[in-house]
Length: 203
Image 1 (cartoon, rainbow, N blue to C red):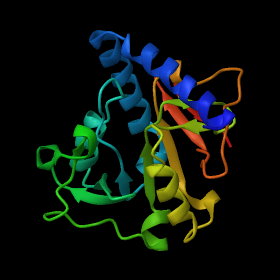
Image 2: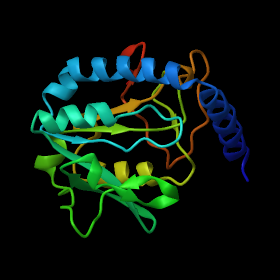
Image 3: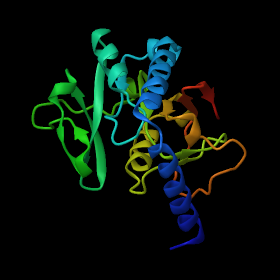
């Protein structure tokens, strides 16, 4: 294991332990604030499609935002792990999700339409992505498998990165205030992050 990989592993473990200590009541309060901030943002209002994620464990919970997006008649897509890659599939209801990779809720690919990775769709979509640790320079440490990094690289090959609408969703404790995260060549940066403290542009 390289020095960078070892440091990322340490930061991931340390941050997950901190996040796991949040009480359910505390997380609910933070989740409500995150949902309000996102729904009021131009990023959300101007998006025709929302590429979200089904929260797992102590992650920030996007279920309320997903329900609101469906009620607003936006197209909503959630990720499904397929081998070493991740694709997004459209959902009509959170009840349509099934248990998938590592017990995370996923769309049923046999019943759902795949997100068309075309320039037209990508530029009009908002991608909300999870992660474990972030910094103020756009650095992100995920869960270690690189699914989002590979997805971002794939769509960045179709659309210039500055035209992608990407926002990380996390709790404020996951955002490093003064330190810069160790990054590897395959790690993709995130241009903005929303926490319970607000929406911040990083790049």
